[in-house]
Length: 179
Image 1 (cartoon, rainbow, N blue to C red):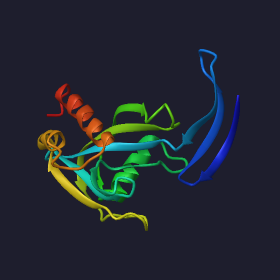
Image 2 (image 1 turned 60 degrees about the vertical axis):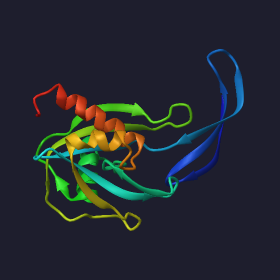
Image 3 (image 1 turned 45 degrees about the horizontal axis):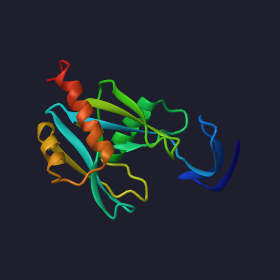
């Protein structure tokens, strides 16, 4: 019906809409966060270890273990974007094609973006990290089969996207020939 931007930044925009709902109710001030889609991946080595990145998250006020993730760059496919992010953040590469596990709206109530999740297999440490000036990332490697207990017992601090991706990857691996 009507939209105006409250602000625009390189990280995302906040839009105020007057919106008409399917039941014909009108909300005069509905706020929508416009963010870019991003890609993330469960990265497994040939030894079936999972590669995680640890970084400080300001809003969470702590360090979190996460799967590698980021926005794709201009002209990249999702697959190219995630492979680049993995190499930059961890130094790991692979010769195998990314396996798409799913594509999900992050929070369709208030956000416009999606996360596209992949499984990367047979990863090998090939390079040093190539981090942006505001990135301070430590790479950790855990046995993939121990990760479930680490998540469930909350012995590691992680976020929803990492936990969800882990369980999707585990389900995929349990039902396919990658054991």
